[in-house]
Amino acid sequence: MANLTANRVKMPSQDPAVRSGNFLEVALGYTEEEALLEASRCLSCKHKPCVAGCPVGIDIPSFIQKITQKDYEGAYQIIQNSSSLPAVCGRVCPQENQCEGKCVRGVKSAPVAIGNLERFVADYHNANAASGAKKPLSNGVKVAVVGSGPAGLTFAGDLAKKGYEVTVFEALHKAGGVLSYGIPEFRLPKSIVEKEVENLKALGVTVVTDVVIGRTFTVEDLKAEGYKAVFLGSGAGLPRFMNIPGENLCGVFSANEYLTRINLMKAYEETSATPVMRGQNVIVVGGGNVAMDAARSAKRLGADVTIVYRRSMEELPARKEEVEHAKEEGVNFALLRNPVEILGNENKFVTGVRLIKMELGEPDERGRRAPVVIPGSEYDIPADLVIVAVGTSPNPLLKKTTPGLATEKFGGITADEEGRTSLPFVYAGGDAVTGAATVILAMGAGKLAAKAAHEDLVKAGLVPQK
Image (cartoon, rainbow, N blue to C red; front, top):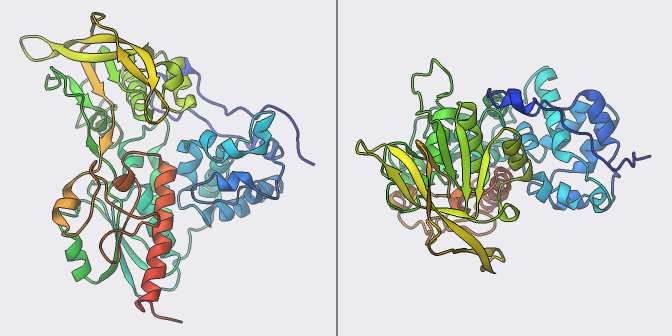
């Protein structure tokens, strides 16, 4: 019989006063006792609404049922059937808007903590599994993946399980894409990403780093090398700026560069060979998860940090959990404010930001109340470092170097719902198609594209029949 306790088991975490000074993971993970108690809250609904809310279709009630039976490896295998990155998803997925948002328990009480349970299961497997996954029997068909972010890794994993010889090409020196360069250590330890990549390698996936497709090789080169299908999962790493005076001053960073230096190049370490500029008064412009990551990282480097966002707290797009963590750690919020100029001195260093006050007007085309400038309300605040986190776009390199590849006006690769592009046997998914979105949506796109690629290759007679 299900445990009908209204409140979910709280995730243990570091004390805010302690964690704001280190880069160790904030959430500590469930104990076995806590996981069993939370799992017992699941009603095991026959119609499984939570599954409908999961972009990769994990059989959530079944894996939770395995937890209640203390069959944690069995639970992992159920998750792994649908997801190539369980330990990642358990940490960074916006479950509150997806699986947990559909949970029946959430109608009258707190939904089951599905994400916390997924993390428990994945961590248990990684700590206790005697051996990695076994490589399936090869079908001899080569497939290339451009980019080792969540979309690319999911595409690679799903086809590797079917026996394809998959090679992932990564532009940076470490695999993981945004998981490695974008999400801070305190939210997603890089050892977790490395472990997930190793799990894929055990399936036979080959990962080649320091290769820029469009420069080192083109998509046409890959096809000439015998790759029968190519997946483009190059993400959205081109930062946007505000186009205001002062953005070229020393001390202005895109959030993309700032977080890459910290996460991928370990700039937060005292002995780092590639240190990042440390400010005392840091302004972060933006209200999404990237802005929260940048602000919380700057806080850990000793700064007084203020997030500037042009709407109110209710419209803040970042996950509620990340906003609450930022508040607990001492990050300030200047809401209904927008920068109009970044101020500097004669040496071209940042000295402050000029803000203008805003008020909310009529809803825009997405139903969000549009911010409206209050004339004459400008004022200056001191700053020696400004981090711009107002979005990113797909890199135009693939468009320029791949003849016939259709793209959208904003730069994303044109692809149908199953990831098919304008070129035969070339697929795309994740941020390279949609622009910046969530890890799990990118994984969902990779999964659909893998299914489409397999179907197309079989239909074309390019896959040997057993």
